[in-house]
Image 1 (tube, helix red, strand yellow):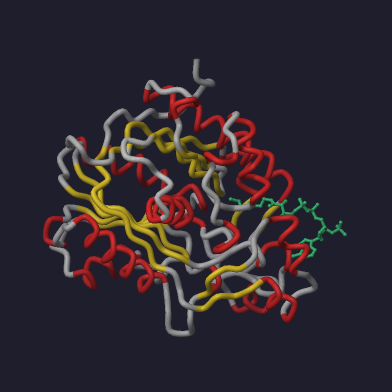
Image 2 (cartoon, rainbow, N blue to C red):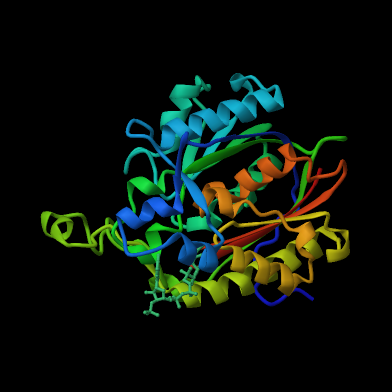
Length: 338
Ligand SMILES: CC(C)(COP(=O)(O)OP(=O)(O)OC[C@H]1O[C@@H](n2cnc3c(N)ncnc32)[C@H](O)[C@@H]1OP(=O)(O)O)[C@@H](O)C(=O)NCCC(=O)NCCS
């Protein structure tokens, strides 16, 4: 039996027609953070497993990364942009406050005047939540949907707050989805859930109506700071990602023994290991790239999926379990057969 309130099961599948990613060129090693905050390479490695991350260049922004990832996924799918019926962008660091990043992408990619929108506010769970939504859209008429997870977090975080700044990195990754078809990788099940009672312990509370941007707010020392109670977030992330993983597998009619590769959200190596342990999955069946990129928010799961496939870690027909957790709290799990 799945745990109660799980959650809004989507049995409508989706073919994964193509994957792509974009990483900024600039690599920032842990050591470089010592110029900004009182930290060390050793502390960051031991507590998080992160060794380096990518950081946007001065002229790079969310739409740039997202566009490049989208083009790579479209090429991988051999799908002309004209065939895309909808564009969805999962991000909490959009190109502009309004309009959404998806509108910029519609124009830049030369898409037809199709519906496009951003899914924002669910932090690192954004991509899998959006995948849940995209599966439903495909079940109700769309033929091809382009889904992109992107974050240019370095632009919006507080570079003087050591509790959070060392954790994140910039990236984008994209997937072209279609209706299920034989011999194509397929999303078999998605689950997603929310516990809004925990909203105040992870997020970025300024910029909305409660605390709008104002000259006064901008003068405050840590005005852009991410609010995060690290230990509470840690525990909840492990519990919810394990729970969502089990629920998605149950929905797909599969067991943990059948999982060839577990691709969790890449926030912290210790969270990844603890979640793998909670699921009883040995580390050789867990994909980890947090050491290279840090926490890339909504880009994290698709980036890991893309890299796992590039690295040959997914056998033909292999079952991949994905889970994510983020602000809200929101969480999600998905199962795909490659
Ligand atoms: C943030 C996190 C790495 C901290 O690790 P931790 O083992 O829980 O560490 P603690 O919070 O106990 O902090 C230990 C000490 O390190 C200090 N510290 C925090 N950041 C530091 C840094 N970058 N460098 C050096 N010291 C640091 C703290 O101030 C604290 O000092 P104190 O003991 O003197 O008060 C960990 O809690 C975590 O990963 N949480 C989840 C975060 C996350 O995934 N967020 C995104 C959600 S998707």
